[in-house]
Amino acid sequence: MSDQQPQLTGPDLSEGVRADSLADGATLAGHAAGEPVLLARYGDEYFAVGATCTHYSGPLAEGIVVGDTVRCPWHHACFSLRTGDALRAPALRPLPRWTVERRGELVFVTEKIEPRDAELGSLLGASAASPLLASPIPASPVPASPGAARPNRHPASVVVIGAGAAGSAAAETLRREGYAGPITLVDGDPDAPYDRPNLSKDYLAGSAPEEWIPLRSPEFYRERGIDLRRGVRAARIEPGTKRVTLSDGFSLPYDALLVATGAEPARLPTPLYGGRRMHYLRTLADSRAIIAAAGEARRAVVLGASFIGLEVAASLRARGLDVHVVAPESTPLERVMGREIGDFVRALHEEHGVVFHMARTASAIDEKAVTLGSGEVLPADLVVAGVGARLSTELAAQAGLAQGKGVHVSEYLETSAPGVFAAGDIAYWPDPHTGERIHVEHWVVAQRQGQTAARNMLGAGERFDAVPFFWSNHYDAAIAYVGHAERWDRIDVSGSPAARDCTVAFRQGDAVLAMATIGRDRASLEAELAMERGNGRALATAVS
Image (cartoon, rainbow, N blue to C red; front, side, top):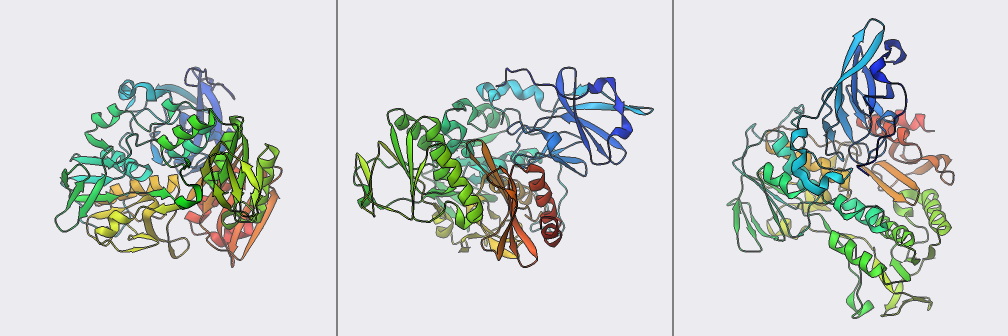
C-alpha cells in the first residue's frame, strides 16, 4: 500500500486559487508537487496540510474544520492545521504541511514542510509500511483546563500497567509533553502494543498484513527511553509505598501510576465444550490462532452476535468459510444499536451467506458440532465465542482502589489513591454529557483517556470530557457511533439503513444522547461537535 502513487484530485494548488473561493471554515482538496494537499481557511488565514488522515487514510476534505483544526470523517482523529500535529486519537502521526502565500487575490501552496520528527522515520523499520504508524509524535502543547487535580510538577518516575490503547497512548503523550523522567510500560502480552481493532477486521479477513498490526516498532520505545516490558505482568500494587511488583519478582517504584489493564473475553463454562479448543478474540495471538484454524476449516460457528462476533463472522466469510451465528437475543446488536440497525446488520450478513440462529444458545459442543438447546445440530470445524467481556479490575481491587462498574476515577481520571490514575475499559468516570458515571470499552475512548491521564500526571488539570466514539465494519458497510446511550426513550431514523445512508438518533427527553450513522460521516462529526458544545437539544432539532 505504501508503494502506491497517491491519486491526485482537484486543482494544482501551486498554481494558485482565488482566495475568495474558500469560505471561512471551508476546505479544498488539491495537490502540489505530486502530493495530495488539503487547503483550509480559518478566518483570514489559509493552511495547507496532507489531504489524508494518518490513521487509515481517511479523506480529510470530507471532514470538518473546527477552529484551526481539521477532523477526519472516518474515525474522528483531529489535526492542527497550523502544525500538522495529531491532536486527538486515533491518529498517531502528524500530517505534512506546506507554506501558503497570499498574492493579491490568489493563494499559492509553495514549500513543503516535513513533520518535525520525519528524520526519525527510518528508525521504525518494517512498521513504516502500515498506514497507521511509523513516525513519532511531535511536541504539541495542549491548553490545560482550569482546576488542576494535582500540583503542577513532573513525577520522579511513571509506571504504566497495560500497553493497550490507553497505556501506549499515555506513554507516548508523556514524552510528547516534555516529560524526561523514567517511564516503564508493562504488559503480560508479548506482542503489545498493537492495533487491536484490526484483529477482528481486515487482519482476520486476510486483507491486512501482520506488519501493519504493531502500533510502534521496538526502536520507537528505545529512542524515547520508554522501558517496554512485555510478557511480564503486574502482580501487585502498593499505593502506600508507591511500588509495583511484577510477576518475575521485580519491583518498580513510581511517583505516578496509570492502571490500564483493560478487559478479558467472557468465557463459556468448561463443561459446555469439554476438551474442544474454544477460540476467543482479544489478543494478536488469539487472531493468529483463529486464522490458522480457519485455514483447515470449512464450517464455523460463532457464538454471540456482539460487534466482535459479527466482525469475526464477516472475516471468516471473507476467507470462504460457511458461517453460522448463534445468539440468545432476537436481533443482533439491538441492546446497543436498536432494532433498526440490528435488522440491517442481520440482513447484510445474510446477503453474504451468514446463517443466523437467534433466540438460541448452545447446549453442547464437541469436536464435530455445536448442539443448540432446540436440538438442532450445527457441524463445526471451528468455534469462536464472542459472548462479552469481563473487566480486568482484580489488580486495582487488591490495591484498594474504589470501584463500581469499573475503577472509580475523578474527572481528571485519578483514582481514590493519590497519584494513581486509571484509563481505558476499566475507568468508571463522571461523564459531563450524560451527567452519570459511565465506562466505555472502545479503542478511541481508551486512547484519549490515556492522553488525558498522562497530561494530568504532569499537572495539567485537564478534565476528561471527550464524547465517546467507536466504529464497526461489516463487509462494505461502516457504522459510526458517537455519544453514549445505555437507555433511551425513543429512536428516530432519518434515511435508510438498507440504502447505507442514514442517521439513527437515540433520544432521552428533548436531547439526543447518541447517534449512529451509516454513510453520513459528516453528520457524525457534526453530532460529535454539537455534543461537545452541550447542544444536545439543538442536535435533536437538527435530526428530527
